[in-house]
Image 1 (spheres, rainbow, N blue to C red):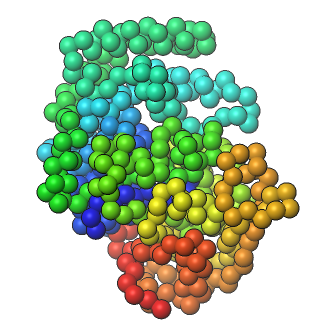
Image 2: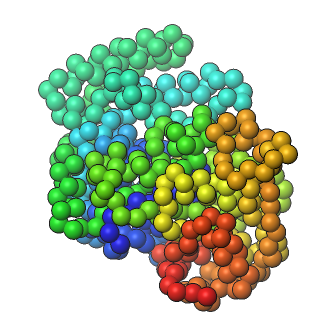
Amino acid sequence: MANTILIGAQWGDEGKGKIIDVLTERAQWVVRAQGGNNAGHTVEVGEDRFVLHLVPSGILHEGKKCVIGNGVVLDPVALVEEIKGVSERGISVAGRLFISDRAHVVFPYHRMLDAQGEARKIKGEQIGTTLRGIGPTYGDKASRFGLRMCDLVDPEFPALLRSRIEEKNRILSAMGAPVVDAETVLDSVREAMKILGPLVCDTVPLLFEAVRRGEEILFEGAQGVMLDIDFGTYPYVTSSNATSGGASTGSGVAPNRMDRVVGVLKAYTTRVGEGPFPTELFDENGEQLRKVGREFGATTGRPRRCGWFDAVVARHAVMTCGVDEWALTKLDVLDGFHTLKLCVAYELDGKRMEVFPANIREVARCMPVYEEMPGWRTPTTALTRFEELPAAAKRYLARIEEVTGVRIGILSVGPRRESTLMAGPRA
């Protein structure tokens, strides 16, 4: 497998948690390199269901080592709760979870500023954030005002935090919002660091030596390409780089040590939050996708917007991430459809477009150019090999490969580990 970057190739929620879980069997390390606890990776193992937000999904595999990299913004209290949650289910992180001392820290004032910022926007301009304080924390990072995990173990930390809280309280007061009590925050961080402190280290040499030993590393992406701060539907995006490039900058592993990129796609398309979505469905087909696919956010619980597969979005991921193969999920959700539609291009002001526009106002005016394909009306959830797929399902997958230029290497037909088909040679 070598060193593999796994990215979401749509608007997030593609099923990355499950695919990471499947690929982890061959890796020694799993690394989170961006995002925060706004991510929600769901993994089902037998009858057990895990939803992880900060801890890499590889923690569910005994003996695998996991890293929360420098590109992640980390809420220490939330991370402790997550560690306690997996520990209560018999999964130990001792000697297996490492936290970068360069990772920036999310504090309560970040969450409060996040909520205030959304509330004060006029209707139609809300981003639809998770209100976890992710954007404001990345904002402090960029403005060189943030605090990192290494600061939390520094003797100067109380003074550093009090100065930040004093500044943020002035902003919150000007907004008419409640302010933060510095001593309460200090106490909560000190309590969290009793558990997190032993896990904090310089993860750059840790991963460098792993590469030198030839150990395989799996980089677990969060969100998706269309939420990338540079290449997504800006400003309706997250605050980090969710493309493959974020794996290097967010971990300290050099780009020339990366070997392949796996892009995760749903067999249709979904989105949570605001922003343009060309193939969104508002009819019974959209409702069927939402109901059958259990399309509700793992982090927010919000219903996801649903639409047909969008090859323009997929090609955008190929160009910006260098996708080598697809892991396509939730094919089984389409089992009940008589007819499927596949968006192969857009039409904008009478012109055909093959690539995704930068301007969201143009995206909002884009009309999908659809091809219709027959459904298969046969359950696929019990299948274990590509050869067993219905003929119509094979044709649907082949058309996705053709219009995106990338082969499907992994196919998921259900939420559990065993509902995964690994592609070999096929007709």
